[in-house]
Image (cartoon, rainbow, N blue to C red; front, side, top):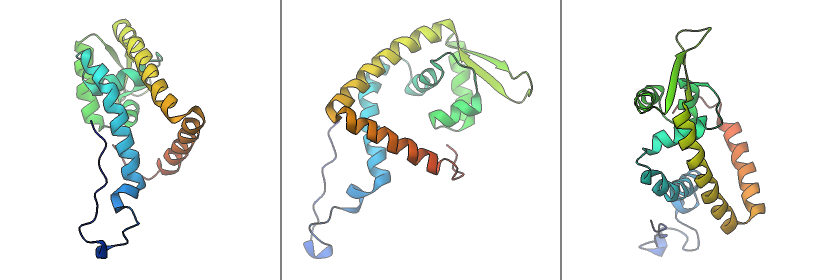
Length: 165
């Protein structure tokens, strides 16, 4: 996918000709656009496995063999819990995910990857790491580290804003 071209104003009198268009300098747009473009590059790899991208995000979230609740995974993969519940059911049927009730609270469903899911996740995570390495190489390690630090800080600052996926 090609980068979006910056639109030139129709009439320079409508705003300062030297200033970028609002959208081209809007932080939320820049974050979303960069994420979209970088993710889309890797999603080509994911689609070759015939795995839906949302299932890849679940695999990546659980790749380190931890157990999480459906709600926790939904928050991480940025979808509503009801959507994740349906995705998890499909992944259970495909043999990628194991599901169980929480020992303390039966309202909570816990999920973890099956052996098949762990194997697929390991393969895709290795490919994702290679893709990230290419992105970091193009950006430069120092800038990538700074960007990650700033993004983590933004996430921490805005995570409590009461916004759900």
